[in-house]
Image (cartoon, rainbow, N blue to C red; front, side, top):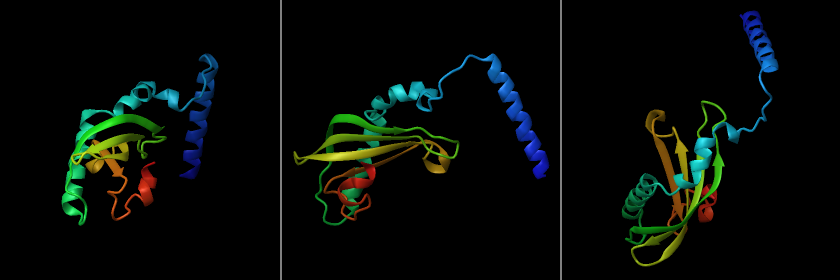
Length: 150
């Protein structure tokens, strides 16, 4: 079985080598392979569905975690992308790390970091959003001062 697999790999490699001699040379840039998403990534941080999901999860958090103030998120400002990590294989997630200033219903502002993961929803469908506000991570889920999401 190993011999057949090795021969198949060798055959594919020779086909790709021959095909490469007839194609123009291109630079191998992993981010450039997905320019459409990379160009839109800064806007991904400010999408309504992302901020709405954060608002809903925050509301759940302040009602279920003891000793957190009963406030809600009312506004987001200074939204920016911090880092973009494209998926390197089918088994990995594309991750967009974002930062913003969140305003709560008591008039205070808080530093907030969040992460958008593609194909990381239930059963690999949809997206996952994780977030952290400084002073609201009572159980240190994201380490001290939201270090995991920075």
